[in-house]
Image (cartoon, rainbow, N blue to C red; front, side, top):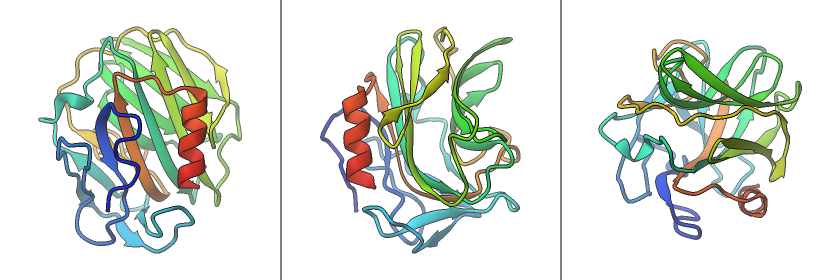
Length: 221
């Protein structure tokens, strides 16, 4: 069942990750449904859904969204992301969402091996980075994480509160015609997510405000 489908608009991807069987469905209106690889449905969720998708880094497991859905290709426009997740392990790079190729095109949101949240935009031979402080994410806790990109500025949020620490100047991402991935890099091998996700939404053309990030956290937590 979809949740919180049209309150703000700007749908580019809306995956409640609460089906409990089959492949994750996209309720954005684009019908860019994902293909579940390795990840399994589980009841380990404290949020609105009651179910989550369990990602095992040792497999690895992920969700793949076909490249043909180019509403996820952002260049000059604003865009935002909200994800509700619990990390089982934060000792390595853990990709949350990626559409692109590092230092070539597109963008990515992930956590690093020191528990930072990191958002990057890519162009040929160039990368811009905005991140949070070390220890922003701790294994075993549910978090509402996300970012807003407004022009050249990216702001990162945890549980509805801004926690940006390192601020990059984000040149427009290069046009990307690649698949989208939840929980893995474009090569389907590196930076596998390890933990549970119960909600992911990408907003096109909108930089969510601080109050909107908090409203989403309050609705999902």
